[in-house]
Length: 203
Ligand SMILES: [Zn+2]
Image (cartoon, rainbow, N blue to C red; front, side, top):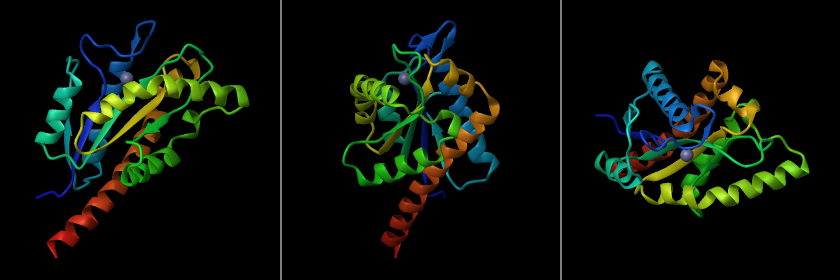
């Protein structure tokens, strides 16, 4: 029996397109990355059971996603999203966890550190300010997603669909692979923590 249950949650889907620019929809990028992440777990033969809240373009509520992660006894939920903001210069990935949750923080930090350089936030003072503004605007929605899951949940905003820099990065296969590796590192960190704890209980 595998001891670690990972739920991959590609955000949005179906009638809920998520953020859009032209005919590029967030829901499609999320699903693409989610399926590639699952594929990578299988390819590496990692001893994790992977569950997905959706594997196609279907509409699914946050409550249903939460009920699903509970029903499969998730150890970690990884929710994948793409950000948007009014300022097209604001860019970069952001990784969120439940506030004051040490475990979530550790996992989120592992992912953040491994995020490919291309998807790091460009930093000059103006940009830092704006990305702070974007985070403030985004937080209630992130909090809502996180609140629906009983298990530790990490939400990765992989980049901004409104930034042409991020858009081309997110559609680039090499960057996608690096991004998925960053998520794998974070999940690996969780696995390590959960595995140690479970072994301790078994002893
Ligand atoms: Zn989203």
